[in-house]
Image (cartoon, rainbow, N blue to C red; front, side, top):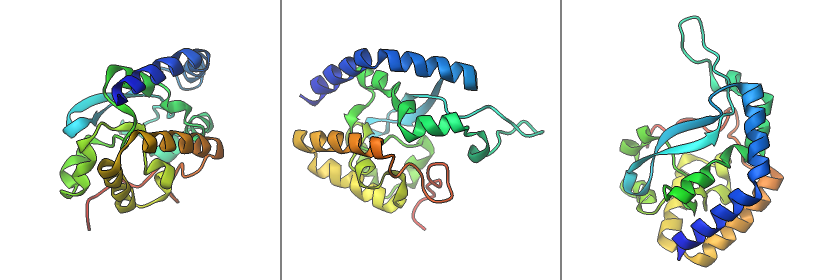
Length: 196
């Protein structure tokens, strides 16, 4: 039932938002260059890797040694606007259609975090990751990693169609209010370094 719902809703949204997606793609190309889509390997169900799609929000600026400059420097005003209203996330609807992720589930993080999780935190990978999740509507990036993982595991243990509907409704409110986009002093969140 969840897969059918994901497929129908994501196809519907891709159709309804096709003009918005087209306009954002053109603006990204004009303001940030190519590639328009940022593609990065992330862990999916049971940690199986897949490529997550997002509109790029940063420039390719590098220092004199060829290393990328900090996220704070490379994130443009336009990129901040895309992140503020979650427009950079729209290509992930393609990931939903492909079956890589669900509309609702723990957010897919970085592959390098996998060995850092405790056995309890690793339960977040017992379900497909999602575009939005219980942690996103309860603080997003403004809460600690530990709180985020607790919320993710709570969702894994309590998931239901009604909870998914509640999360999707609350996500719309969060997007319009632009809440919890970043952690204090960071573009999004500080990197997860495991339990200290």
